[in-house]
Length: 611
Image 1 (tube, helix red, strand yellow):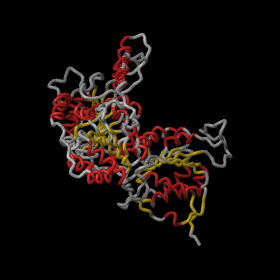
Image 2: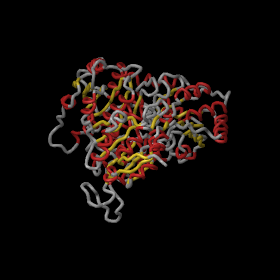
Image 3: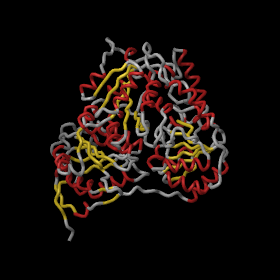
Image 4: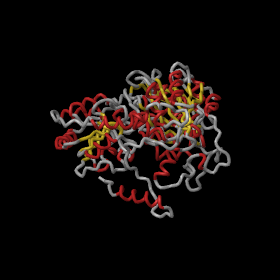
């Protein structure tokens, strides 16, 4: 007779999760971020209280940003571990939708457990329930469906017997990896069931390493043998497959230049002779030039996002062939690519064996030298910066000069991602953490918490602008209360400087992006240092790059969050490198600047390649 144990559905969920391990013996679900409300406090709240030693529960201030913390934690650990996030129904749940989309785009594992309505429907409509007039099964949590790798609504306790293994399988599968949503009806959370004791046996989940198909290996190898100027585009999958050393060995054995996407940056050290730098819209001239000449483009773990490909105008060689080495078949077959669908490490090893002895002409060393001769002066400390606003490039330089080998720089949307992609000299793998798949403002502060929790020994520097800070600063208080240490650099350019430059670059007038170009009666008087200090951070306002460097050094010995605020010039950006990016420009306008921008747009569109 099967032995059973009587537990509520919520108790069964957390007990099952506590038994799911990785090869190191650690829990796969490292912790839970929770904001309790009427949809989860009585059921999941009580259950989580009972397992605090096995699955610690952390309290945040906003459902979206606590989810960003969980995402950053997993990203920094190369998807080897994950976290759970839970909210009430209604706005608590929908607040997490943005973060779920971010995890979905970036293929990162998070277990979303939003509360849901009563399965038995007795109290309908409940508080915060958006009733659908045509479909009685629709609730707010249905918004998670298109952005979850696996979605389930738990309307009976025993459904967890199949839903939970599916959830963990999805999050640990390198091909299907992404967010899982288990919408948990609030009455069901509290209902008891006689669970098979075997359901809670410890299980070790090992990262699958899908091996390459020999036919695909030979097809790609044949293309490489015929190529004269190949290039490797290293994406985030290189990190997730723990393939950075394999990539280095492959590139060195065959003398193939490597360029890096935002997610792939730090796959090779910046000073490796075969690392030609960042690619695409925010790329280096050195990288983009070899991509333009390449007759074979080998993508390794990349989605070939439009920022990487210059909206598919970057790879100009008419003889160009595209190869995609990716664990996900969807990505491996993009844009007519010759697919090599497997783990990045296994694929590179098999491919290297298949083309053994094939060595290409090394890239021209002057390409990198010329690039750095252009951009290094931009990051130098100014001789006298007492009368001019610092540039973002100078801020990057100041952080670079005070960084160590163990420093992780992180950011998300806005101005700094482009400058960091072009200018930051990343050393060790994992030293560059950028959320640019979803380009989500608000990821930064919350993400810095996740990075530090994932790798406590690393020095974390978080870049954020005033616009992002105003959108999502609440987890700064969480970091301070939890004793999380990182350096926060807040560059205040008084608005959305990045989009303002895009507006101007597409022929538009400055309008509604910078604060003083918007409909405001009074000028902005936000004191970011005072605000950060009010939440518990050590906060200072500096007025020069020299002062910034001094406080960056002091921050290293401070036990907690050290926030440094600096006014910056919203207009300059690195003028070198980059490529075209398709942004829709009006065909009809009364303004000549728009007509001129549209003419450039039409010319660039003609260079796009569909395959």
